[in-house]
Length: 301
Image (tube, rainbow, N blue to C red; front, side, top):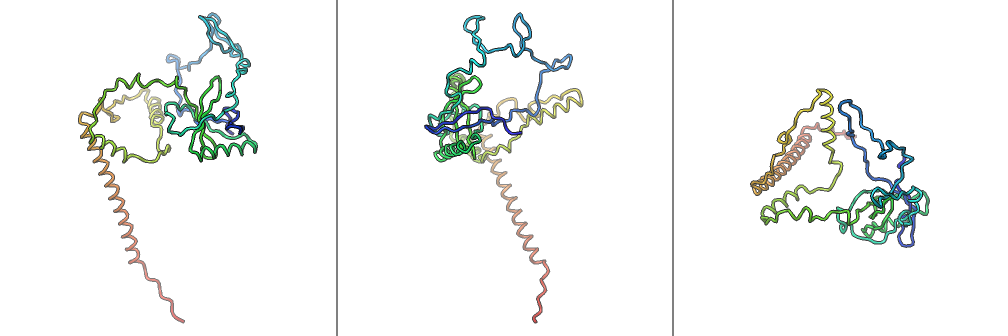
């Protein structure tokens, strides 16, 4: 089935306005969904919307409202909410441009793919904005309104399209002081830092998301199969998983040295194996050349 647009509106850069459509960039379906079950009966829990003193109510009788006093609400109909005078409800106006590294990662929320609407005028304007963003290596900032929220958004070139990421407001991000102030101040040994940096350097590679798989999904499926077959689940402790009961930094220097030494030995072993394999291939080619039957000479005349 063709993708369904999450939001439709316009992208504007100064006097250039193009029609766009947003599509969610995330697959939110879980491999194995966990439901709430009534244990005695084995029935799945269902939810009903109820009003105190009324009981269950119909969805058609439910409206949105804001509490203005204790148990006093101002209710709003959907068509009344649609009358909110907010330009970002229909248009994303790019008002500022920044480098990607300028945005603190904590502010990024959800990604969306942006495509032009199906007309040639929109496609041309869309391509111009996309390539201008790519050429400048910048992110455009604006705001958009979706489903009762006004959000900051960041847009940048992404292949043949544009990637839009919604951002959190400053008030939504907790101050680090509430957690980090309690971390003890430690004087770091230069050799320890050098060894740790070496470990990071050796494990540095280009990011490939295909290399990372959900171990939890596979383990959950195995647990479910075990429960179906035996009626119970065997206990797993931390030691069986290779996890120790406490931090293994009693001798941090020795642990770092062994880690670096182990990585170096492994790298040396791989290099030796590669050289040995190459030497075997060379020897095989030479042997094949010596043992190959000579081609008969063509007789003159």
